[in-house]
Image (cartoon, helix red, strand yellow):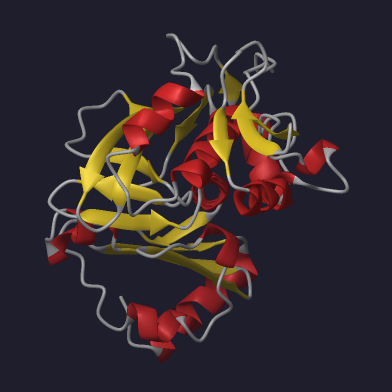
Length: 288
């Protein structure tokens, strides 16, 4: 596994009775109020550091990822050099954020730098229904304007010619853009956990596979009686698991392209007992 190259850290520091955001090696900094300094210090402080350090790359410090998420990254992921071009300094990023007075630009800058440190250069192949390709994490302060979400930074680069973009909101949420701007996951770790679930299902038995114009009627109501896999679920796609089988409902493209026929669902069984339980679930809820 390739080690992630060290990226410049964003440092919030008291100086002569003021509080500044600076990058090591840069003479200039951005002045912030004391209350923002305390917020930033609280957001990045962690007694354990090490494995939970948000300023370390996720391949070196997976933090709150589940064992499944860690195993997925160990099996599939690698790090490539990031950034591939000169990274705009804090002053330039703050200037770009100044177009959005409704956004706390100091916190947005801090979250951008944290995303760059944690995810920058992460690459892995995914079998998620949104991608099914190799994706590259490249958090970048090229901000697009969204009426509902404010500034959206570039986040994931994908090679296949999908007609949508994957961006990062200033609070860390993952937003897909096309006919509508859709918040898919609360944060990038949830997206990775969802990819890990797809990966794990590659070795399970498919019982229901997604297909064009597939009906999802009754699926969410039936699946909601099962335990939700919270770490890999989001706002437009959800996972449930019980008795050795797993249900996935996917509405991301239905919301993104505003076409109900793009919704889909799937069901997998881990073993023979799970397969029998899955068929009982389908029969009890009249799903097929």
